[in-house]
Length: 82
Image 1: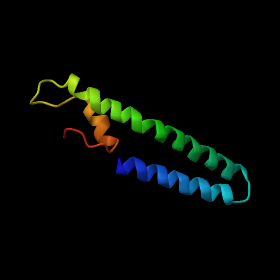
Image 2: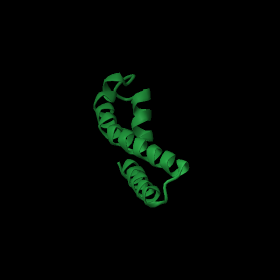
Image 3: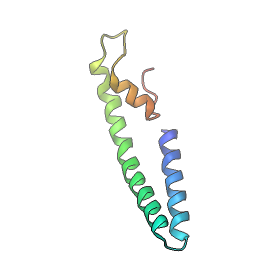
Image 4: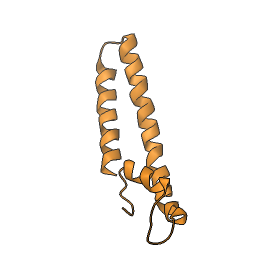
């Protein structure tokens, strides 16, 4: 989860910075983008935790923890079985 927490913190910092700048079309677009990233990032955590719970059901066998769900959990920074 450190990766996700870092991403959310960077989005919050950037959103605060661009919100404090004089309004322009660029700053408004950047604010909207960072706000959207924050919303999606907050939803990503619970989704990855759910994948972490169901991923073992789709392993090839107990000694081969290989499926796409594990890859998503790893990329999301939730560790997992690997």
